[in-house]
Length: 403
Ligand SMILES: Cc1ncc(COP(=O)(O)O)c(C=O)c1O
Image (tube, rainbow, N blue to C red; front, side, top):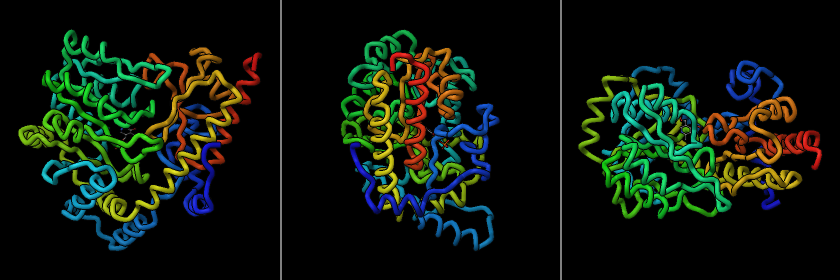
């Protein structure tokens, strides 16, 4: 096993792990509804079984005990906490005037598609990718174009040749990019980002970069924001969406950022967005986010160690089934695993649910190109991850005669 859990990691798990059954948890309590079987072991939905950091819980309790939940605004102290985090953790420059707020990244994607394109316009994504990207395009009656990522022996790569062809032939009006990438787990290198952004920005195609997974640096590759590629050369052509929610396990507190460095775009965005939603900021989302950015570094570092350990466990256990393919995990806490050497696409669901007894995100949800993949969530109890990996191996041994 690549890394071991330290006594500190084990103590952290003991104090932070929760049994989420019977808490109206999508991942655990909606299994019957979503998968037709309440007894599956769930490794789907990208949230964690760990309580958020103590200072975040303390800030929330304090605010809740004040007992008044009237209209609020986002204080400068919140903006400073976020901007400091971006600078100190990642070296990213964000100016306060670039910041806008929303009640979720997916919400923002819909708003941005509506703002930047018209019905029927081509919008480019890179599949396999987080499926709400495709939904944000098709639900708003835009035309979905995919530049499919290439699954190479060196890992997932952008198909630059296909990208150039799409730019000249399909003429996309907008790009939605995922960085770090869910589900393939890449943290794109600065030179890759530059190669992708150069022709897009040169052709006046706005790029939305969904950077919600920025804090999950699992391997050696550090995260680079599109805001800082080539010394900020692309800033006027990009919009970043991110949030404290993925990092600190706060998804339902509904608070996120839209970062728009281009002043003319900001003006246009401000006048457009009020025509489609007029939401108030999420009071508790802001309280939690500020406390997290200020005081939850040590908590996050524990979580990252547990994810690395879980990644190591899965690889170790799956070595018993050498035809299972998975690339090194650079970013996110999501592992994209290809069972295609053993299980055909039309049998994947039956295999995963009826033989492995797992609930996962299926590769077909992310792209028609990856029907034999499953996505496993590693931000959970190491015992759950080991059980899931062992259930896959046992099921393969029962199903594949040669194993
Ligand atoms: C790439 C990506 N964007 C956005 C989200 C969800 O963001 P929100 O809950 O703020 O809508 C997720 C959740 O898994 C994600 O993986």
